[in-house]
Length: 237
Image 1 (cartoon, rainbow, N blue to C red):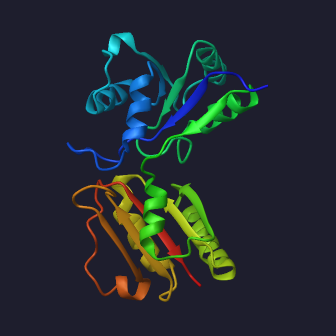
Image 2: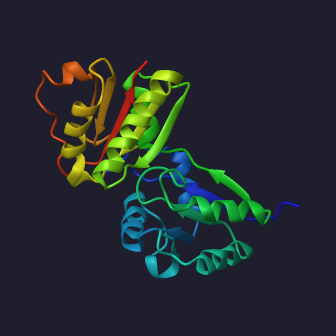
């Protein structure tokens, strides 16, 4: 039997802008109606709530922290919040549950009979895929590649071979300070004919999204990816 209260999945802007270009009014109104949130970082979430004009001051709002270090028993205890009312699960940036630590809690909520409602907002993965011109019917998201050189090279080789066989677009990311290194590695390891898309600072004024064959990337100036959130997509077929 489905229980009364709802877990709302709240997307947040991928970067900071004064104006709102990414969240619809319906999403903002639901967020304003909530006074209990599960978040990665309270300070970031408080800043976001002030940005949208949440009617309650922060001391009247309940925050619980959920990140990759949160113990399992603590995550389970958050179910009790839904006994009192609706709860918002807020991503640090983009869509909750996608490249985000919230998916385990969402699974618990389903298991315990509560309704889960995703709200409309930005997802850097889907926005990059939309703009890439690569296969959007079949794709895989790998998250972060290995930090170990040999393992990372093996992962890239596996993805390219799989993409060549299946036609799937391969999507992954890197920490911003290592973007340039990964870009150079991809140029060295991928076939010249493989189409590679670089998507950085999506939704921001300096947004950069470009798809070229690897052979073409080698003949152009290297994009400035240093300390900018970026996604890498390629398709070999």
